[in-house]
Picture 1 (cartoon, rainbow over the protein chains, first blue to last red):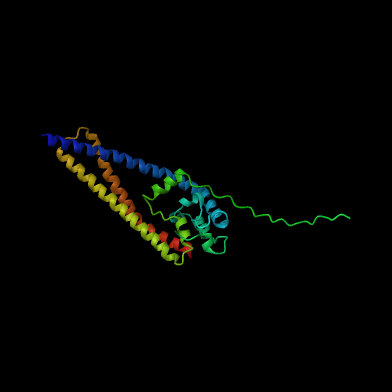
Picture 2: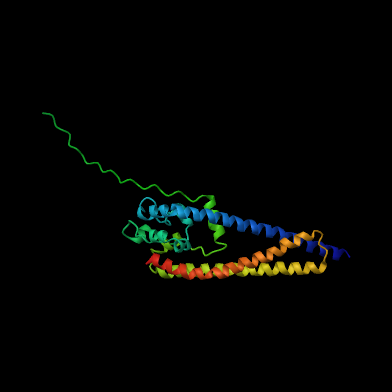
Length: 109
Length: 139
């Protein structure tokens, strides 16, 4: 009888945990949607394009030696953003001011 | 007659561009949350691969990792949905849940998890579109 009671309580607790998890997942989805809206708005206003252009054309002094390209806020851009926004794609495809790509965009690692 | 000072050309350094503003906490949070839903190979990573000897292979590797990550996430969401469903069915047999209303959000979790996994799987086609764009960038 005690074992049955413990088992029922465990099942009940499990369902409560699932309900809490559901609430957390909903918060996660809503948070992602809100931040996605902010990201799209910023992209539409050209904030990322400006950062990207600044990093690519005036690469000197912006890219630390031996480091990854410093894109500022544009570091959150993904290739998906370039697919969605042709202007960003053109900006990203622009040749850097530096003569060799190695200097402008140091290698991985 | 006094000697006139010879004008000396002073090299004025060109004005340095101001560095772009750093990503703040919200930007980093957004980058993390986005990676839970859509392919998230960053422009920064692809541009860094540009200097590699075989940039195309580096980009392929990036997309290989991304596909594995998304597939693993989708499978995990599906498995979690099955676990929750099993828990619900098992507790239904016990029929001793004190607050019955908690069953509904728990059942909703199954739908959310299945929807999440389905969204990830149906969004995998974006990898193909993005891969060609990434290749254009490194060439």
